[in-house]
Length: 170
Ligand code: ZN
Image 1 (cartoon, rainbow, N blue to C red):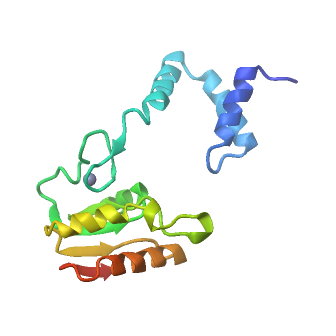
Image 2: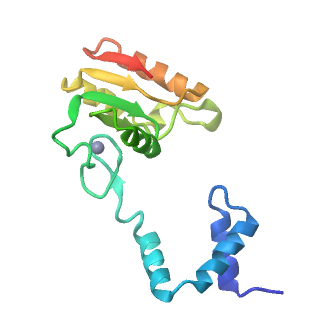
């Protein structure tokens, strides 16, 4: 049986998502066919606007819809303490734990020669610039414990050598 092209196209789009195989992709497409039109419209609007209405925080590169993210804009946070993480998800996890009251710096990846990701592809230069402004007193390197994460932490440590900042690794 040949499915309508629109269903095939939607299935193909779902299949490109991480962790979604062909069967799941088809199940999602069939599920959406049963959803009320207004819910579909709302879903479609969210998809259309997802990238248009989000950007990176001008200070820490976290996800935001403003110039600054909600953490950088929160005056109760300790801006002298910066936790360096690889991704938005890391920020979310640390915020969920709720023990950290400083601010973040999101690198958007880790150094990975195998994937052609060097220091220049990450937000390391902006971290150095941030530290040079003198407000930050402590940098906590919270990159992953993978080889790439360790290499990234080491690289940052070296990049910050000589700057008046305390560096720790978690
Ligand atoms: Zn921010």
